[in-house]
Amino acid sequence: MSGFNNYKILETIYYEDKKIILLDPVSKDEPINNIYCVDKNNNIIWQVESVTEKYKNKINMPYEGMSLHNQFITAANFIGVGYDIDIRTGKIINSYIVK
Image 1 (cartoon, rainbow, N blue to C red):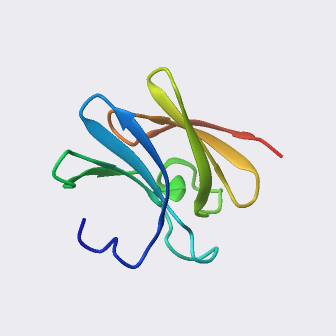
Image 2 (tube, rainbow, N blue to C red):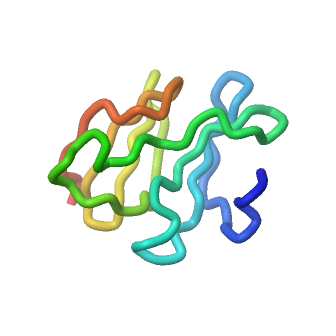
């Protein structure tokens, strides 16, 4: 996974023949959109959709945790906002307050 060498992988979810990885957010500024889906050869299939692409009025912050629920990933960011993410596409389905 080129470009990931500077970051620690915090969590990995195995799904079918893919891995969903959460990179360690070094700060609240980097890396943004820090959830990726990669294939068995570590080629990037998708990077999670930017929050500001889906919600123009929300702040884009790194994720700090994730879990698998059926066909979507639940992930929360630094400021306590949770997101459901489509596991096949990386698109954000919805958002809610978690803290």
